[in-house]
Structures are given as structure tokens and as C-alpha cells.
Image (cartoon, rainbow, N blue to C red; front, top):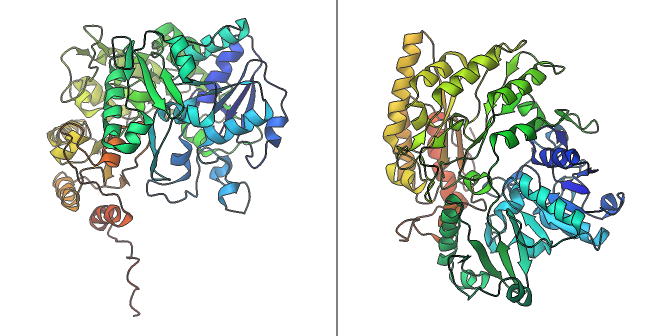
Length: 568
């Protein structure tokens, strides 16, 4: 089979295309990879024989619009997933000359269909996963229909997809129906809907969740927020309902999600024979330098931040690898050419969710950290401490760092782990993500109140004082989030100054597909009350908020485009 990706190929388990390729190979299948094909013709596709089972298509590790443009729609001149970080194929810097096209899954699907006319086309990866329903495209500044119906592909695998792709492969080998595969979406005509779902009566039931249609949302954009909230609750509850959304002439049908990986399944996946190297044709890929000495230990996130799509894509349930599997991978990394003794990251979406589980087995809400840490959440402090100790003891390893995100509220509940991280496992500075300090905004973001940041900073500084160490923080801040005004930005500056926390890492809110924050951005409505909400949409409003931070913490304000500087 043929797998097509918008990234340069790196045979490392941090990259989804490598995970799927190695998994299929482990089943005795031959897999070809077409990385960053030209899209001005089908020539690169036609170099391959017709795939026997299917052609799998992904935009890569990022949504292609996020990879190609900033949150304000400016063309990016650096691409971590392309050779030498260069997003252009040559010195001609035109849209048609980018290594990755906009809306890559659509473009690649068209080229694959033109080349392999009867071959099954399967979409996957984060772009397909988050654009599987009606979604907002911030570059075009409009709502779009599902990428599955737009691409006229045969199947979409959403989420992490390993179990789903194995089931798809098995059914293709048996030449059986692709109907009903967990973790997939199909598109059906009216006639096919009646045939496949004769018991669907046109409304939500125990079996079906009916979302507002493309036509309804087009007439009334407020329904877009309703749809996103329904999807959020459905995903967090791991519901068995089949989700339906009418998309012009077709129906988009999402079957229930695949079950999350067991420890044994997670271990087996990461123990596949990855070379952990980029393809020889493209050896210099910045993303590889960032992750080459990192090890994934956990998957999933139960934080459910409004602006983040991790819970929607990876799921709210936490999967953790065994210590034995992690130690085995660290031992391999320590023997790699060029290894300098530092494991750059033991992590995942949220590193200190490693080993956590629910005392009740899970609930429909699955919102473990908001508005405070759930009493039923069991945090594996001793397991994480033992993991850090054992990884540090692997021959050739001198330093073990945690560079992935850490939830502050959990660290405050695990004082021994927090102390150990400060003492031995912080790479120079501790990265924290308060996002903002205004409590109303934090509520919109589905984050804990500002008092958490205050308590965390004071606690860490006291621990560092006792250890005789200096501790510095790199706080990540989001400006121009829905609901954020210039006054909020000024309040943020005041609060960060009070805590003596300089802001060096901030970004304007980016309305990416698949998040509730994006739905608030589009509709201008509060996620809870549905009342009108101020949304800074135009460049001037967004720039002003960013300038308030930059003038205070970086000592500069970019010159206004409206005024010419005076001559000296």
C-alpha cells in the first residue's frame, strides 16, 4: 500500500506516519512512503504501482494551514517538518511552490484518485481528524464542510488510528464491507443511509447523535457552537452513539471511537523496529533534531482546554507505557550515534498524567482537572519517581529532562515529584502554561483560576530555595482569545509583574479546527451562557494586545503601519 504525507519522512515513533507504516509492516505488508510529493501534477504519484489495498493520506504531524500560516494568516517562512526548515522547493517563494499544499489531504486525495482510479482512498492524521465535521478554516475565514466529503475519499480514520487501520486492512484483505469500523467516518448518500441505518428516524436517540447540518449552520452560525459542544461531550464520554451530520448531498457518519491502547498494545507499538532517523534523502529536518532523543511515555489528555484539540484527537483517556518498555527504548537511544547523554524529554501531551487513572473506571464527563482536580483521579507519583530514577540509571544517560507540558495543579498534589523535577529534571527553565491571569478568561479557556499560578510559583520558589537552586519559569500566554480585551492584557501584565514572571512566550489565539475556542471565535458566543462575547478578530485588535505585552516585557513596540517614523 502507499502512504502519502506532507512531512519529510522520519522513521521515529514521534511521527504518526512512521507509527502506521511500521505497524502495517509488522503485519507482513509491503508499505511505500511518498513524502512531500509535488502537487502541480500527479507525476510523483504515478511513479508507484497501483496500491493493492488502499492509499493512505495525511497532511503530516500538523494541520497544513497551521503549518503554512501564522494565527494572523501570514505565510510562515520556516517549516520544522521540511528539509533544512525550508518550506519552499527552490528560490521561488510562491504558493504553488511550497513543499506542503494548503489543505493537503484534499489536494493529495485528488492526485491519488486521478492516478489510482479504483483504489480505496483513506484519510488520516490530525488534519483529517479535526476537519471531519463542519469546521472553520482561518485562512479562508469561513466554515467548510467535512474534508471527507470535500475530498470524495472513501474512508476517514480519526484519532490515533492504529486499531482502526488494522481493521481496515483486514477487511480489505478479506474484501469485506468497511461499514461500522470503530474509529472511522464514512460518507453515505441518502439511499445508502436508508440501507445502512433503517432505524434512523431523523433525530438524536440512544443509537444516534444528530448534529446540526451544513445547511443549518450556514443559515445560523450559532449552531456551530452547539455542534462543537455536542461533539466535545460525546468524545469525552466515549459514547457508543453513531454521530451523523448532513453535508450537502451526503451524510457524514462517524462510528464510535476505537478503544484506547492497553499497556501491552502501547508497548508493542513503540517497540517496532524504528531506525529513529530521517530518510537519507532529507537528513536535515529540524523536527528530528528536536525529538531525536525524546521518549513518549503517555498518550491522551483529560484537561480539555477550550483552545486545544488534543482531547478531541487523542481522547480523554490516558494510556501509559510500562517502565520496562520505556527503559528498553531509552537503552536504544543511548546507543544511537551522536547521543550526548541527555534524554531531552520523557513526555507526551501532558507528562505528569503518566500512570493516572480513575478510581471509578471513568465517567461520562471525563473532565478530570476542571474546575479542580477530581477526587476520583489517582495520580501515580511513586511510579513516575521510580521511572525517572531507573531511566537516569541507564548506562550512557547523564541527564533526563521533562520538556513536555506539566499540569501545575497535579504537581502541587505530588510534592515529592515536584521536588525531584526541580532538582534534577528541569532543562534550565520550567515551562508552564497559565495562558492568562484573568479568571473570567481562564473559565472560557476551561483552565483553573489564577490563584493556582500564584500558589505554584511560590511553592516552586520555596522548594528551590531549600535545595539551594535557582529556578526560572517560561510561562506560555495566549493573547486575543475570545473574550479577551485590551484591559485584560493590561491586567495580565500587572499580574505577571507581581509574580516577577517575564513573558517571553506568547501567541495570538489561532482559531484551529476542532476546538470550542474556535467555535466561540466564529459565533461570538460564550461557551456556557451563549451570550454575546467580545472577540478580537481583526489584525489591529490582535496586534494591540500583543504590543501591550511586548512593550512591557521586551521593551519594544513594533512600529505602527499607519505612521511613518520621523527623521532624526
